[in-house]
Image 1 (tube, helix red, strand yellow):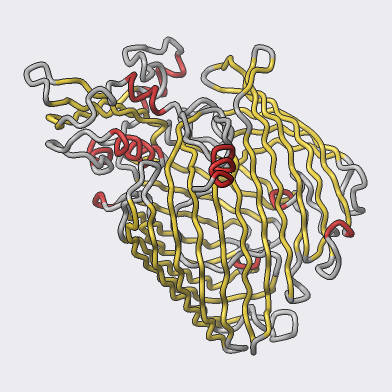
Image 2: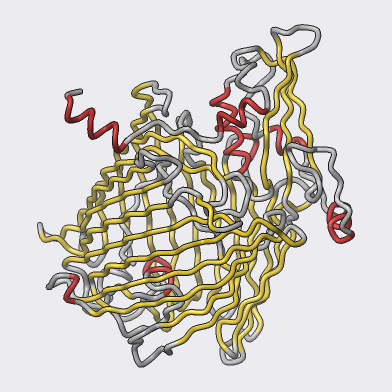
Amino acid sequence: MNGLTRFVYDRIVSEKKDSSKLVAKAYNLEQLNGKRIKSIKIKQLDIFGPTFDDTARVSDVGVEKLANKVHTRTNERIIQKSILLDVDDKLDVEKVYDNERIIRLLPFIKDVRFMAEADPLDTSMVNLTVVTKDVFAFGMRARFRSVDSGELEMYNQNIWGVGHQISAMAVSSLDEEPNLGFEGSYSINNIRGHFVNLTLGYADNYRREGILFDAEKQFLRSSTLWGGGMTFLRLYRTDRFYENEAILVDSLNYRSFDLWSGYSFKLSDDPSGDLRLILAGRYRNLQFYERPDPGPDNNQYFGNSNFFLGSVSLSKRQYIRDHHILGYGITEDIPKGFLHEFVLGFDQNEKADRWYSHLYFSSGNLIRYKPSYMFLSAGIGSFFNSNRAEQGQLELNWNYISRQFGLGAQTARQFLKIRYVYGFNRFDQETLSLKNRYGIRGFYSDIPRGQQRLVLSAETVIFQRKSILNFNFAFFGFADLGIVGSAHKPVFGGDYYTGVGGGIRLRNESLIFRTIQLRLAFYPGHPGDSSFMGFSLREIGGTDFYSFQPRKPEPLQFK
């Protein structure tokens, strides 16, 4: 490494001094690292009351006591099959970190800690205790899509304590039949300890009628050799083609079959994460039974198709423990590393046979002065029809999360995002909007559209130290700028729109309920189909970090 390269490297890339080391020392992991495991015991804490630092603590709040009594704890066998270490293995601290992360991914687990103690009769051996804390797995959710349609859902993320998930939703509409319909799903996580997840679904309501079967094994760990999955979707009736949500049709009846598999090769050992080469292939079949009449605006979308895809990926990843980023005090696993991929495919379509390819690069946690985080990604891809690029796109993303800093008696973080999408040789009806999660939050106008979009977002979140009945609060303020326009001129020559506002978020990490958000926003220069002010009170889903986990080959999404 020459002097200039070393200078740049030292100022951009550095090793993370994360809280995992402090946790390891607190629970004797580092001191006992390398010793053989004599026993592994599982200890489950009540949902409310005890903590990992004080496991004997008891809640004195009546409603929390009741919740602890009615809750069915996770069966120990379910936790056991997610433990990667065995008796007589050597204690490996890095493997422990990875194992804790995987257990935290289970939807019914709030958090987990591995604690180690030297065996009193043989100090060369270690006794391991896996301490887990469930979430209260039952929840309800109501949603009104309009004044005459809505949904009421009940769900359990850990039915009978066996880790299965069930959801049942009533879907109603006064204007469309059936006026009262149903939608439900049943999921099983980590079947037989092989980290295979299965989901079955059924729907019969005014929006759709169909069945779903989905089974998948992801590359959850760097050391995972095989990944793959199979999805079968049969929609007898729907008004929306999922892959292109902007396209609404009167009648659509189709079948989708999707199969993929991949293998991961280890290229090198590295304390900061193994470098892996992943080869993957995918086959997707679409068969339409009812579809719109063919026309220039939908010619390619609704054609019967056999799509073959292959990918070559390089991945390197490690996880850093932190808190108060996207969560409200729970342990969060922030990825660092990279994922670079090349995808090549051939779409055997009854409308026109086309090749497809894209390049995608992503990297994360490059900031020298920790614990701030930065994630970068870039992708360019296109279909090719008779050597002509078609439905192409370029995308660039930058995401920055500041360190946690003091703000009076509270703590806060700053979140910054830049997202750019440029479409070239797209079909006329393929447009980008600035609606809500794709652009300006709380902005639902259909007027600003184009094939090029730039969005700049800033948000400050102030975490409150005090909680009420385990409900944590965070105040936030935001400012969004969105530019959308034609692909035939510079993006800064497009139409400008803004949104500013703030609000409060409420979250209880011990409950399965989503975060409740109250937001007031203002939209200067708003279009005619929207208002200057917007108010919302709703549940919001969790936001995921960038992931450098290898995945199935898939075209870039223009949305």
